[in-house]
Length: 87
Image (tube, rainbow, N blue to C red; front, top):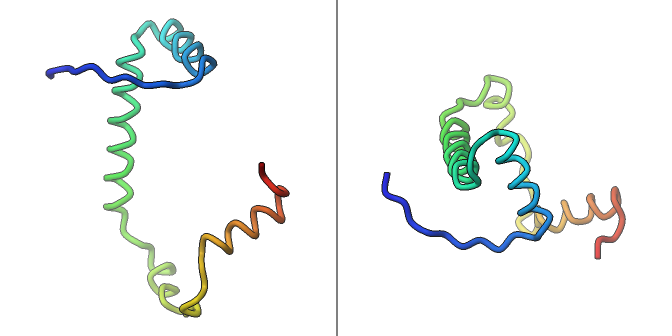
């Protein structure tokens, strides 16, 4: 596989952790990054192929939300109530 250079700018803590993991696993940071990306891609493709179960299929479409309902605003409100105001 042909390689190319990629510049990332993680925090110093993340870089130190990456070096520690690479040492412990006797591998390179490049290999860790490559494995992570390929695993994420595989996981994404597996989730696309999973069929819905019969109960989920039967429940799908039962609730109709109002057109003005905003999922993101609703989740923000729920999380703010649970965890408090985030900076």
